[in-house]
Length: 154
Image (tube, rainbow, N blue to C red):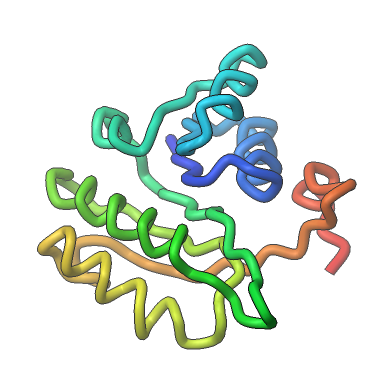
């Protein structure tokens, strides 16, 4: 099975990571919220802060499940932009191909127009050659998130 990193360990990140664990994958949860990481660690999960993500050897796919709140009807991408830039820095020192999966809510065209250029800028590498990028929209209901991951309703 694969080693995966879930960057952003809120509702979507935990449902995603725990769903992959249930399928036999090795998952590390990454977040800036130390309380969330402490709870996940107490549950027996592997965790790390973003600045320690580069120490996680062998990760084949990075799932970005960072919060994208809406303010005055507009999606705020600041948290996700920071996570993408940090991941680009992690990719800079990695050997081997990996996949970056955007699983946060973003407007159409954002992955190609904003996040791929950020990853390339901070990694010094080329998407499609040195690493892959894809979009995986989430349709998880807050009160049924883990069940929805295992058995999608949409």
